[in-house]
Image (tube, rainbow, N blue to C red):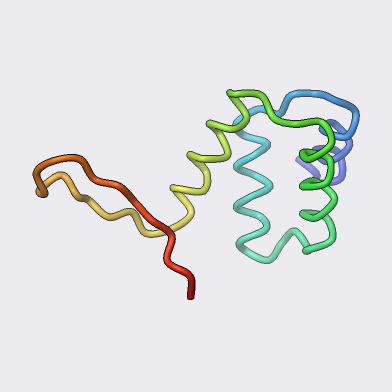
Length: 85
């Protein structure tokens, strides 16, 4: 896969596969995809939108990109909140 091809597909209105989204996110986090290419992809997403499947794939890729806490030992409903740094 090549980032420019993935960006062009979204720009042209195509739907991404989960593998394409994972490739973009993981490549960006490893520093292999530069900021300007990720910004171009985000602009294409803002203009064209994302399907439910793409949104789910992006959410899964983002969750898998960091440390995941196991809260199953805590009873009741759990809610995550982003804390500004």
